[in-house]
Image (cartoon, rainbow, N blue to C red; front, side):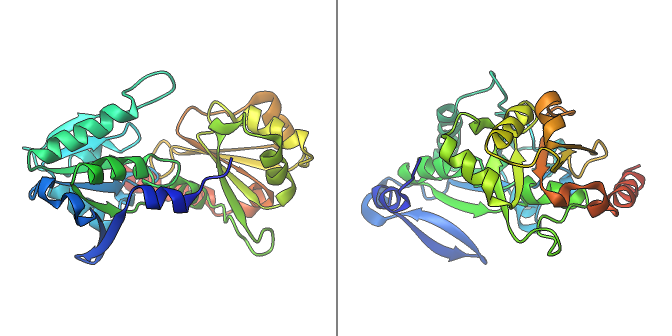
Length: 287
């Protein structure tokens, strides 16, 4: 499926201006009279797991929040960075439960219209398989300024914390990030993934790893190709497991959500020899 970014940008004009070293999106001036001069929304990426993996700017934004609207994957310690007086609204979603996206956008806009600083805390990075763009559009259409603070995506953070170098120059020169929830996409797309030879990073793989692996096998990916699973990255619950593509197609993912799946030579155990020592160090520090 092809997405025309140009037509989207033309349909919803958004100007960007520099604010305190970051970038804030703002509506064009056509409806400036309807803007609430006090209320703002800040989209903050929470990072890949542990609370200490958020950016300095993201933590500072939480410290100034009047309202925190947070996902289920955001570490509870991050929510505690907000002032005690701040309202906390859980909008975590999972397979078959949770509020719909319109409800989340509505609560953000409604609080911001009261003149509140709303921090929308999202796991990983707001724009990597998130709904960050939709939330910006909802706020800007309501005349509300939006500040965006990126986070470390689990697509990068989880493999790194497991000792997996996605582009180890001896083994891979590129990587592709995809979602496990799109296994019903066209054969053409999966054929391209299988034939690319690049490292594949699959987000939301806990319940779809077997289907992803089978899709890749159907289009010619090597059955013996290494696969790694990184669960609960950056926390004391972090675990790493390894298999090959054939075994993954039969058995699926060994962990519940949140789990990132890596396919490629870089996922082999010998390519991540430092991971056990790094993990033990994090556990010792946390305890």
